[in-house]
Length: 143
Image (cartoon, rainbow, N blue to C red; front, side):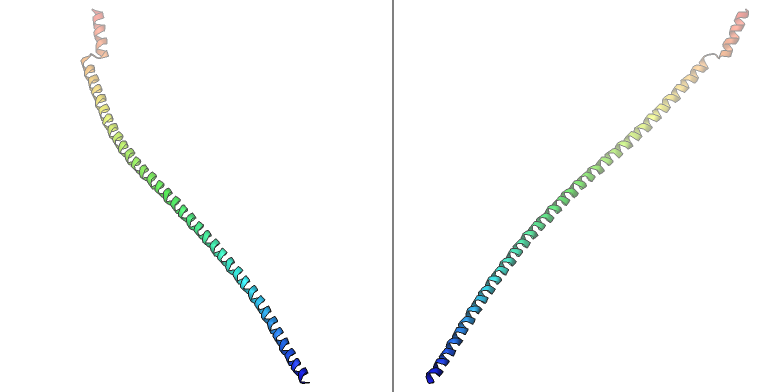
């Protein structure tokens, strides 16, 4: 009976050891699966982070490009407005000069017309009037 009891205890010990090794095996498998899943998750997170970083760089370069285009456009507009302003000043000066020359020409024209009218009056005063000529002709014809 001692042997049976001892065998039974050994059997129990072997069974416990077998169960223990089976549990350890299952635990190791679950732990290995967990580590693989964790590794995959880390790789996915790294890939997502890399993708986000790439997208951020693209967005940053796109914003820099847009800002550069806006700056170039603003410089072009500023230059165009500056040129337009200068041209307006030049045109304004030319218009003033033209107006001044017009006034001078009008003044000269008035002087010339006045001179012509004065000469005409002088000529009229030098020549006898139509009535005087008619009178003189009639008088000469009567003689």
